Length: 83
Image 1 (tube, rainbow, N blue to C red):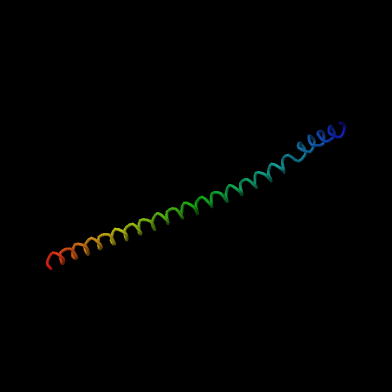
Image 2 (cartoon, rainbow, N blue to C red):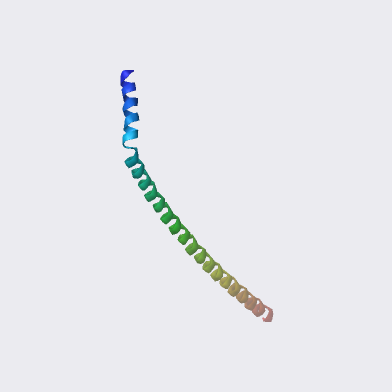
């Protein structure tokens, strides 16, 4: 029991003595982590924009292909009509 009390007392005095530096350390650590998260978020947003543009481009190509297919089918059906 006395050892646990000593431990608590030591922990108490430890926290009051070195609270400042520890807070600064944790605060700089969390600022650094926050900055990393913000950079990651920006990267993800950029990737999302890029993929949206790619998707739009693919959709446009698909529409072009579909239109060409329709034209070809029309031409084919007209040829069949003539024959």
